[in-house]
Amino acid sequence: MNSIVNFKPWVTNGGVSAKEYRNSYSNMWKYNPDVYSTYYEEDKNLKLNKNVCCTAYFNGKIQKQDFTEGFYIDVYKLIYCPETIRERYKVENLDYNKALILDPLAYKNIANYQQFDLRLERGASMLTFIPKYTIKASPLIPQNIIPIVKKIAIARPLFYTGCVKSLIIIFSENSYGNNYEEFDDYNDIMSIDMAKSLGKIEKVEENDDFEWVEYGKSNKKYYPVLWMQFKTWKANHTIITLTKCHYPIFTCVKLIDIDDRRLDCGLENMQPNYDITYTLMLGSIVDK
Image (cartoon, rainbow, N blue to C red; front, side, top):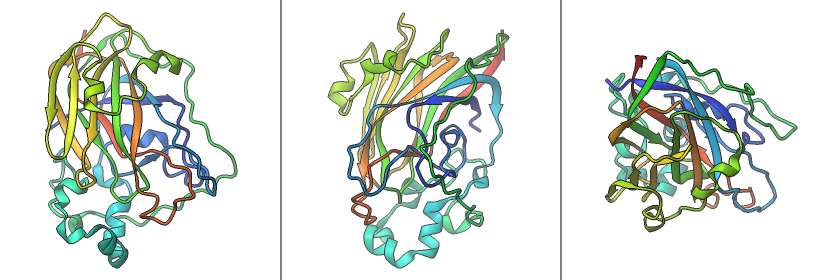
């Protein structure tokens, strides 16, 4: 079984969506199907706010998470909106194990979306202001426990307007920071060739579904660990085993680009935004 090293959400410049408080920033750090949606405006065809920084810190724990405790809107749409969804996405040709996030860490071994424990949709609070997500001014990082990260799991939703397409994950083993400009060196890395120009490369992988570049450690305060990109909308989650273990106390996930599906949903006048299900650090913890 894959253990999830718990990283607690800290600060982001992404905000949360203007209408649905359910799409909390904390969702992207939990193993469940709830989605984090960055802030957007309606009735304004604005550009995507690229290179959003999402930070989190190690809180000394292993995450104990029931994947089915969240509301899974992709499964909901397949069950209750079948005609619209099937016509638009030709779902009869989908490999559901690739396209849907059906417990890929194998806590319950859900084989088909019809077996998913779909709960009633929670009501979404309607907001009348631009929400900002901030928590503690300084994160409380334990001094007597070391996180060991061996794998990284990444997932995005299927039937959303701004499913994240490319991202880069940055680690620090001794620092944390909320000055987003410190991560500007990793802006706009939108192709594998651009990704190969960063840092010391440990491994490069490409297949029909994904491509990614793994980096080695450096002497920088913050260093890139993994750049990855989804190559098809039909594959929406992956687990990447790292060549070497890392011991981060802080991470910044920079969201770079999206698969823009606003037209599919009849929402082309809405500002594009990012939708991501989770980024999880898998491994273990040990005492110093």
